[in-house]
Amino acid sequence: MFGAGEGRERVARIPGEGGPRITVEVLNGTRVDGLARRTTWALRERGVDVVFYGTASDSALPATRVIARSGDSTLARRVRETLGFGEVEDRPDPDLLLDVTVILGLDAVGH
Image (cartoon, rainbow, N blue to C red; front, side, top):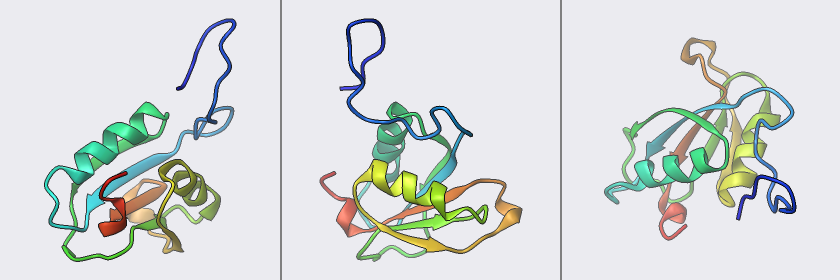
C-alpha cells in the first residue's frame, strides 16, 4: 500500500514525485465497459494526473499502448511502470497539451 506519515515506508514510487507532474489521457481500446474509468482511478491513486478518460476509435486493441506525446519518452516509461503492462511508443503531439496517452488493450483486462 502507499503509506504516508511517520513510521510507514512507501512501497512504490509515485510518478511525478520529486519532479514534474505527469499529465495523461486514458482511452479504452477494447469493448470492456468501464475499463478506462477503472484504470484512471488506479493511476490517480498512484499520483498520475489523468486529465481525461474515454473511448478510443479502435475497439479491438490486443496490447496497451503508452504513447509519449510531449517528446519525453521517460514519462511514458514511468506510466508504463506504474501500470505494469503495455508497450511504449514515441509519437509527439504538442497540440494535445499532455505528456502521455494510454490506449488500453485486452492485456489491461484483469489488472
